[in-house]
Length: 465
Image (cartoon, rainbow, N blue to C red; front, side):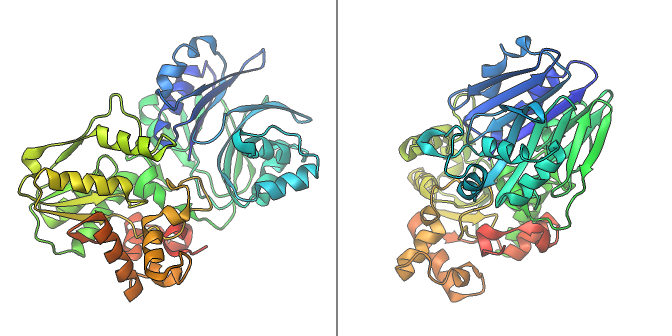
C-alpha cells in the first residue's frame, strides 16, 4: 500500500519528518523517500528498503538534510518522492493509492507520444502521471482536484511547494489523511501512530476529496471535501497499526470487537485461544475475553532480522520467511485444542504450513477464526491485496474447484446465508486441514468498525461498489 508523513515547522523539520515517516514502515517494503525544501531548493533521498529497515538506510542522510517543510514516504510500489518542474513551479510529490485507468489517462494526457518515464516492465509511473494531470491546471489546488476527479481507483497525495505542503485525500476517502499540530508545527499523516511520541495532537481527518495547504502558521482549506466516503475496511482488519485511528476510530479497539463478535457466534470446545502473530493477536484477545477462555501464545514471532513474510516477490522465499520467523512452543501445543484468530485468509499457502506444524508438535485440534469474511474479490481500488491475482485467493480457488469457473455465482458464494457459501468454506477448511473454520459475518465486522456500511468499502468481501 504505502504511507506518508509531512511536516511544516517554524524550526528545522527533519527529525520529525524522519521519525514520522518511519512510523509508516509496516505499510510498504520496497522504497523509502524523504524530500525537504530550504533556501537552495528541494533536497531528496530515496533508498531501497526491501532488505533493510527504513531507519538504517536514512540515518546518515538526515544529517545532510535541513529545512522547515518536508514530506516522506514508505512505498510498496515505485520510487518516491518525485521532483517535478512545471509552470506552477518546482515541487516534490508523493502519492498513495492505485490508478486503475492509468493507461487511459496517459493516452489523454500525451496522445500517442507517451514520453514520460516508465517503470520496470514498461508500467506507467503513476506518480508522474498524477503530476502531469496537476500541471494541466492553473493552480496546485485546481490540479489536485482535477486529478482526483479523473482517477479511477484512489489517490491521496502530498505536494512540497514554495507555498507550503498541499495535502489531498482521494475523492472517496479510501485512504485516511489526518492533520495534526504541536507548538510551532503542523503535520499530515496516514497513520496517527506517528504522532504521540513526536508530541503532535490530532486536529481532524481530511474529508474525501478535500485539499488543504499546510504551513508552519496553520492549515488553509483550498478545496472543500465531498459528501461520499468509502474508506477501506481492511485498514482496521489488518493494514492499519494498532495505535492508529481513522475517522476517530481506534484500530486496536475494532480488532478487539471483531474477536468478541467471533466468540459470540461460536461454541467450540477448546483449551486456549491464540492469535497468528502479529495481526491476529488483537482479534484473539477480544475473542478470549468474550469467551472467557485462556489466551496463550503457542507461536512467538522472531522479528529482529526477519522482514514481513510477503515482502519477497518469490512465493518460495515468502513461505520460507514466514516459517522462519514463527517459532512454536511445544509445551503450549502438545495435546491441546487450539483456536487461532487471524486477520484474514488470503491465499492460505502459509497458513496451511502453519497448521501442519501445529499438528507436528502434537496439537489435538486446530480451529481457525478469520476476523473478516472470505476475500472473494481482489481489491481494485488500492494496492492492498497480498495476492497477485484474484484467482490466487483461497475463496476463489474453492469456487473454481466447485464450479469449474472462478467467476461463476460469486455473489452467491459471498453471501454468508447461502449453501454455496457454506460449501466454499468447507472446501477451504479441508484444504487447510482445519478442525473447524468460521469466518466473521460482514454485518458484525461493520458493527465492530462503527461506521455506517455506506461509508465503508467492503468490495473485497461482497463486491459492493
